[in-house]
Amino acid sequence: MATGRRKTNRAKKEETNWQERVIQIRRVSKVVKGGKKLSFRAIVVVGNERGQVGVGVGKASDVIGAVKKGVADGKKHLIDIPITKSNSIPHPIDGIGGGAKVMMRPAAPGTGVIAGGAVRTVLELAGVRNVLAKQLGSNNPLNNARAAVNALSTLRTFAEVAEDRGIPIESLYI
Image (cartoon, rainbow, N blue to C red; front, top):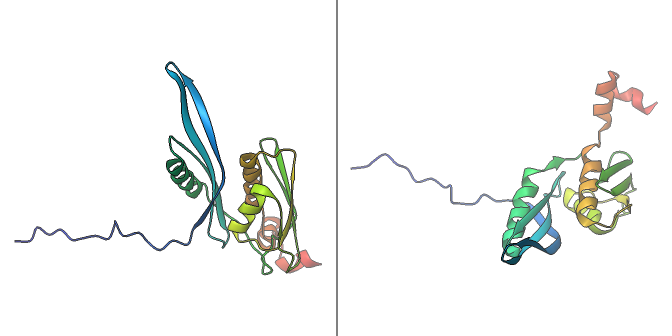
């Protein structure tokens, strides 16, 4: 006699095209009554190279666990960014994260990603292929990655600007 239960494919993992890159793994310690408790902090960038990117931080007692938590955190904090036909950003933008400032400028096709450190990783995983970027203020990878995400999240397309101003998009090019 059948109980009416059907097998589901919940365990089957769907095809994902997410890429993740670890920016930094750092050993951190907490002082407790018995001495120092060591754990690891991983900063991870997650992106699909088609306009979605997120930065996550994970802490665990082992490196693998910290990276997994960082990936999960990055997927929670995904942002969508507009990318032009030339795989660049629509306009110049600045971003701030902690003490770090990031300046980004669109670039002509064939330029490539001219950026350093964590900003380069964020831009590559976001799918931006032609951009000029500069880190200012801080060398902290976490704050620079957050500043890059902050800058990318404030990007707007020409259509959005025209809609906000209540004018046709053609009048922006005059």
